Image (tube, rainbow, N blue to C red):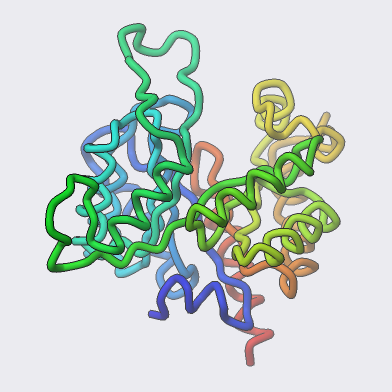
Length: 300
């Protein structure tokens, strides 16, 4: 398969699927579900204890995906959970097993009711992690020793929120991420073409490829949760309010239909799309397969 950077620079939009590793120690069921994506997605993006919930190590689960499914892996790495020594070790491990790209992020806040003894790491932030990736790619572990003989070649990315009300501030942060070494950015979900195009244009101007987030909604309760609990999506309320009073079947059908239309309208603008599973991959997989079929049709 082409490299991550090749797919981000291709004429057709790249397609990734975001999924959380399993909660326990048995990955078999989730691997079976993801297997149907082989030949349809360009990568699987693995979250890193997203929303402050403990999951299997993405590094371990990513290795299983690479070995068994032969699908490229983009691995999220949260500064919240590790100091710089642990981050460097995991980055070297990721390079050793052929992880295709890493995403530097601060990490979600630990929710109320989580393990009260957890200690959040504030050793470095996402910008510092991007700098560490760049240093490791030069063979420098930061210890003042000789450069590594086998040098990693890690592709680094970051995250962004196109829905932010103060979008100029978001653009300032994007410029900092680009300067720190981000080659691509994964966005929070977008729900309208104007928001997506505005962000892509700015990202292009600073040399960063954009993977626009796409979030299929499964049921009205999920839309309500996103409105009430996810601050980053407060600007998308008018889009999520449309699911009020619908049955689950109606919500799923409308979500697939509208997301397909949105992705088609932005296919010439963004480097690609990342479909977010939102707590379960079934609808995200359905949308990914439908978009993949469309993408193959227009490629003929």
